[in-house]
Length: 190
Image (cartoon, helix red, strand yellow):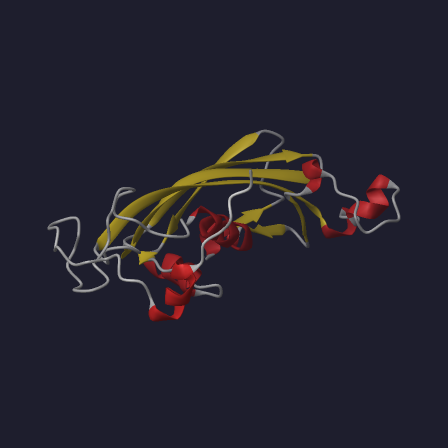
C-alpha cells in the first residue's frame, strides 16, 4: 500500500501528520497470514498518525481501530469487536542500526536494552510502515474471542446454548478413562 510509505526527504524537523486507509482486503490478509487468527475484518480502518524527523531518525506514531468479526469460543455466536491499535516506532538508517550487544559494549548474547526494542532500520529514502502495522494489528487481536466474559457456552451433552436455556443434562458425568481415579483416597497428615 503506497499510503503506508513515508518519504524521509519530505519530512521536516517537526511533527508531520499522515493518514492512510487500510482496506478490508489488507486487514483480512494480515489476519489470515501465519499465524492465522480466528477473525476476519468487518470493514476498513482509517489510520491517523504523525511522523517526526530528528536528524536521521524518524519517529512514527499512529492510532486506529480495527473492526473484527469472529465467533465466540464458548457458544459459537458471532462476535464483533473494535480493537484499538497503536504504533510507535523509531526508524534509523540501516547502516546506523548496530546490533544491541555492540551498543552496550557487552559481548554476551543476553544483553537487552528496552529503549531500543522498537527501533528499526530503513534503506534509501523511504520507510515502509506495513510490516510494523501488521505486527501491531496481530498483537491487538484477542486470543480467545468471547461474546461475553460470563458466557456459559454450549452443553457438551445436548448442544443447547446455556446462555438461553438450562437444559437439565447431567454434566457431572466423568470420562471413563478417569473413573479409576475416583476411588483414590489420600491420607490426611496429622
